[in-house]
Length: 136
Image 1 (cartoon, helix red, strand yellow):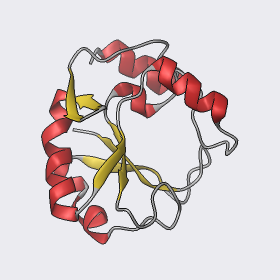
Image 2 (cartoon, helix red, strand yellow; image 1 turned 180 degrees about the vertical axis):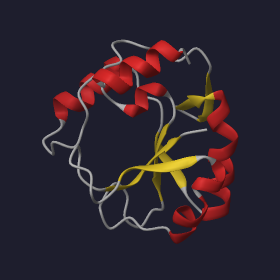
Image 3 (cartoon, one colour; image 1 turned 135 degrees about the vertical axis):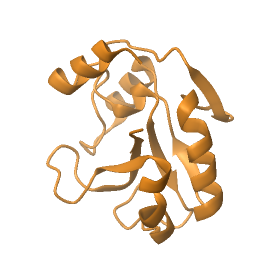
Image 4 (tube, one colour; image 1 turned 180 degrees about the horizontal axis):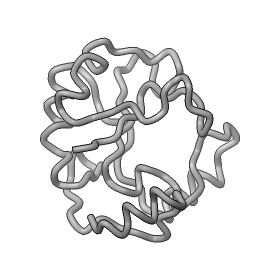
């Protein structure tokens, strides 16, 4: 990923129509940046999780945003998912809800290079205990 893309995102939060050049398939219909694939697969196996959402294009995010009524969906060009490093994990019990809780993920995320994006103190989108980003 270009350092300029990261700087632009850090300063403005806007990615435009950026598409990572190293996207690989994680599962059918789910793409991530190449360096993210192996750590995600390890966490999924270790913590009995699956991936609900990974890379999202600008156009796909635009459709999600247009349909959303929750206020929790990022505008197109502003989503971490567009970077190809964000993952929405699910466990089949409480997907995409504040009740999502997986102690194994909490205990192991950092070991595998992940950080919770939106904790209880963030003011941007509200608490999203399922949404992690790869930071290595």
